[in-house]
Image 1 (cartoon, rainbow, N blue to C red):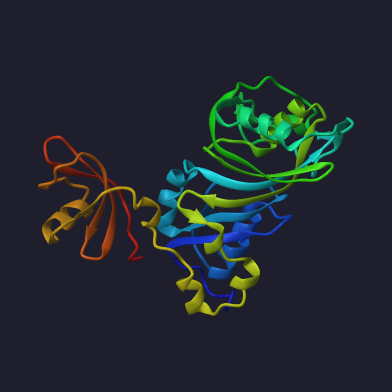
Image 2 (tube, rainbow, N blue to C red):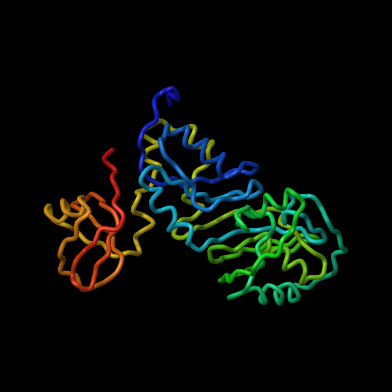
Length: 300
């Protein structure tokens, strides 16, 4: 594609299979350049060491990115036993080593069982969480360690996949806000030898799966029409919300930010449509009125 063209408004979601060794922001900028897109953002970053599913939102789709951050995630992770690093993964510096003991499958599965369900987790120092206005990783880079409050998370599934002498591989399905690096370290502590993340791959984010994702390398082989065809519709992540279909007058009111009366027998958030056009998000109220909440304009 001609990269010298002026940027354009593109609306939709691209499911990227992020490669190893690049930040989520760099991966986003590479794809954004490929599309000559005006506006883009990602939903929940992956560390450079991590690969896999990274949904990228273009144009009006950036309005749903916040909702996608709340999605449950699934990962495949390999942890290195016997070492602890300052970052919780092999990108960091080793700060402790301990001998790896002999474990049975039953030993390991009993420990994984302890981390399944609702647990409290202390976030790692190398994270983007803020404390007193400063990101934790900025403090960590200054050599500072501060006390972090534990966060309530849920591990829905924790399945052992493979055991080697000094590595464990497992699959984890978890709620938002889960730090796999912290989980690896905690499992390592319970095993008595310490651990750090060696490999991490995101397999699922909400309704999206890695099988739907495409690599940058494959994207670069597509022509302009194929690139646009790779985008998923903006309203796809919102399919769990009920849809309301508006007539011409109601649609005109909605676009002006005005309420309309609808005969619907449900309350709460809804998707709004006029014919096949997705108008945005609204709320059905007790008085039978539909109030627009977040309007989308994909005609620009």
